[in-house]
Length: 171
Image 1 (spheres, one colour):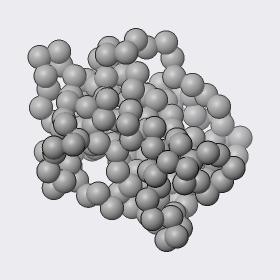
Image 2 (cartoon, rainbow, N blue to C red):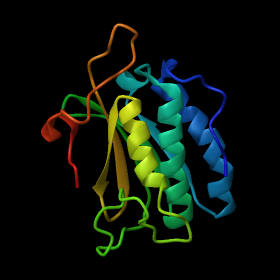
Image 3 (cartoon, helix red, strand yellow):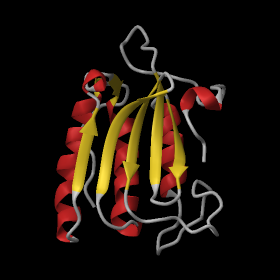
């Protein structure tokens, strides 16, 4: 599967660059399945700075899950959500109601070990965000970042103490 570039840990970059790089990595694998990858970025959020490497890794996990387990068109969207920046990865598939928490380690609907989403959730926290399953059908995962930049210009938020309403839906 495609992998992120050679970003250094802690380096900030514009969110639109992170998304464009992911689009380049995942366009061909999805196209080989006859699936479209679309990107929508709210213009006012394009230059938002994020921790590039971890955000890129989270995107790769979400896009790989859409590639392996999802169906139909895949959408990467960057939008505002209740004072936060939301990065969505959605497809036209659905998660089984039997899968109560897709972030639990060892939970898999395919041949994998079920670690990808759990690791992605941890990486999201390292990047200053919060990763949630925001919709089961059609499937959408959302990476939320608090909308207040630090002195370095990287968006941060403490997902352990953030009020769920401030970071969007958790289910």
